[in-house]
Length: 272
Image (cartoon, rainbow, N blue to C red; front, side, top):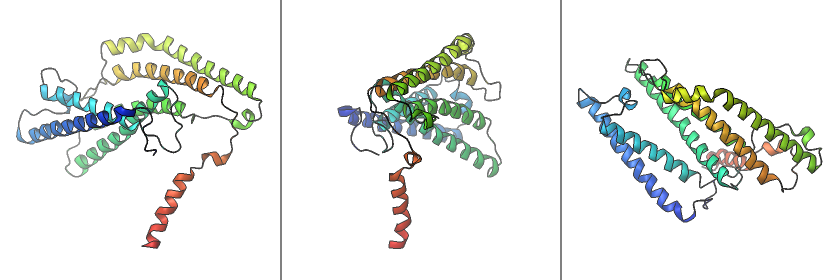
């Protein structure tokens, strides 16, 4: 990844310090809650994580975890990989931040499922929350990945005809594409707003033993993130408007840096 600051600039240091502090606080509170689970009969459980009212330790855990995730997302978005285009505006930066949050979400899904496997097959004590939590996180990962794909211009596009067009025709097709995205976004919000609002206001739950508010959070999140995708599409159109026409080939999908890293990895045992 590129080592220079992409957008934080002088704020990179303070953000890093705040991130480390909130991560340390989260780990300390988590350790205290886990220890209490083994030492106290009335210890807090995952059930209490969804119902933190009157539980200061749980509230502190949720606040510190949320702060750590947000600060880590901001910090990691300040560096981009070789294949990532440099952000050119506020919405590009926002998409990078949410993409880092989605990347961490994948790690959390793996950790949750790993915990469930160990708990179920080693200690014969399956959880009542792992499946719902993994579904909950994975749903947000899927939504945020769509926003990131739009920002990276990595969504499905057919270039065979597009590359043969003159630049004015390419711009026209880009405008039509963005217009269709906005029509879809408008129809989705128009048809789903009332339902999403009602589910969010009553914080509708999943109906399981753990009973997380998956419908109450995912329904509005779908509409909100689809709106961000549509805005990102306009941002891309504006950013690309005066750029020279691009010509695409299968070689564009080859990451030379990644190939070189793999080659070095394979050569190391030989040199050793």
